[in-house]
Length: 292
Length: 234
Image (tube, rainbow over the protein chains, first blue to last red):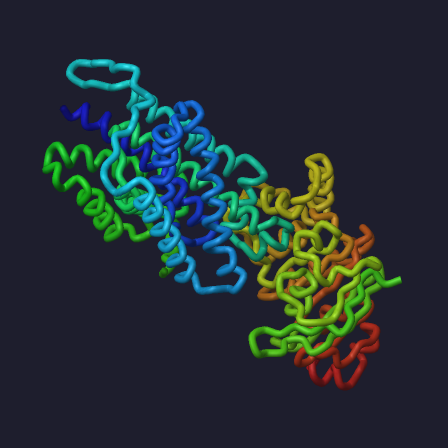
């Protein structure tokens, strides 16, 4: 029973971690919480759904197309919603509200297009299961976990080892100085949005596959949970996002089975509140509190 | 022939006229200094040359090409670099990574060679190579800022208040390297509130007051000029 909850928690936690990394990347570069991130996650799952049901595309085509499409969406979120605000030196709060607006727009567009009812979602990863003692591990869970780890490693490699990643880190430390070094700051910011939207898309597809249904509310729920995960780990820190995501996932699946399934969503926030009371900068955060 | 020529440059911040028409000429291989009180417009001038601060009118010509409307990236690529006021070291990068950021457009092997040059000038940076930028002392950070600027293999290096907050001995250490940097073919534009120090190393100086150039002369003459001595050298 307990082991089973660990397995379930790690699966969903790795998905949260992947979304939280996207959050943290954008936050690192812009000191901005991207509230459109949850909507991008939902949109990714729905793109695959729409391509498969409306256009009859097969999964091997639909999934890569959706990931690319979300890259474009991520770019547009920055281009349409944020770039002009930056040019005009608008207060950070305006950018925050803009991402909320973009997120709401995406959610409502999907609600109009496919309706608000829950849709059943194909499981692309259904290859049976393994039973160890009385713990059942499905291949779906294994593949989800491995996929998430793979993307986390890939993102970490890009951020810490490549020139474009170093540019991101430079922009996140000192935007003005990064510009003075000749870094194309606009491009770096746009790329960060592209990567974070693509990660959200992958996560959305994985979660749809896992639960085998999607609804338009998923953006809000995941938005809140991954936000909690990112804050928990210390916003802006990639290892923090991963640990935060896993903790939230584990806490909610263990809490759901030992306390009450009804409190599933509340548990993540209870943990968040406790951590913030003890260490306001998050587990891996630096100790400079910045007010929004 | 002048390597950099600025003509009637005006900059406006909101309602404030920060530069009211500045013109200056810099010859290749010169060390010039811009001195003036806090808020006179010295930093605004270099920041607007770099394209960080938008220019309202006037022109900037570099090696005969008009760069008034170029963006920062193109300006850096063409060979002008600014070591900004307050040093702006990347605190979470090691000394090596900080230097490599300076060599943003350089190829790997060219950067390695440039790294040796920088370490020759500032041996302390070699000792600190794997240390985080944020943990260096003020003087070391300033050396790193100058070293990082040199990594870009600039033709013109602009230094904004390199002496800020440093002990006189450390300032002297850094300032005495300017001649060696000039010998590498770098033209230096030095912004300083520490006017005496700056005029001692510079060939020529400009004095800025409220967004205008009020005096320009050879450094020696400025050091002797009554008005300058009274206002800036006390």
